[in-house]
Amino acid sequence: MDEIDRRILALYQHDTRQIAERLGAAVGLSAAAVQRRLKRMRASGEIEKEVAQLDPAAVGMPVLCIVELTMVSRPAPHAQLDRFKREMAACPEVQQCYHVTGSSDFVLVVAAASMEAYGAFARQWFETNSGVARFATQVVLDRVKAGCALPL
Image 1 (tube, rainbow, N blue to C red):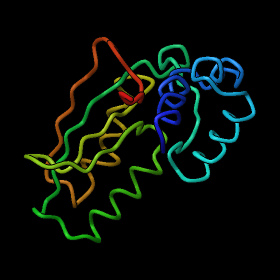
Image 2 (cartoon, one colour):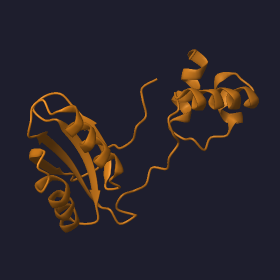
Image 3 (cartoon, rainbow, N blue to C red):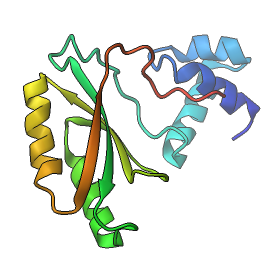
């Protein structure tokens, strides 16, 4: 990845609907050259995926929770960690899941239609999971910034 790729990505990550002509004008390339670079960066993995960022409240998922979770065994066996990672990756309510260092093993961002729906989710995935020692939930009061743009 060269400096021009980084400049393209710095712009593109904030709005993937930008036309190649606009990106090219900003970085001094033709639209065709920008399209070739974007295609290459998709193929090589610098661009993992392109998604729409939705407003959780507008689509009926207004409750966002940050969950810190600790497994029973510390460190947890790889098989237990791998199983939990797969389960969380498959849950549509789990917006983000991070295996972390420190006093917790995982930090998750969970979206729910209501506090009751989050309670049902927590009972299903945390309270009845024999591998989970404890979890703590923080309910988001205000979504100040959400996104995944990197400082390029």
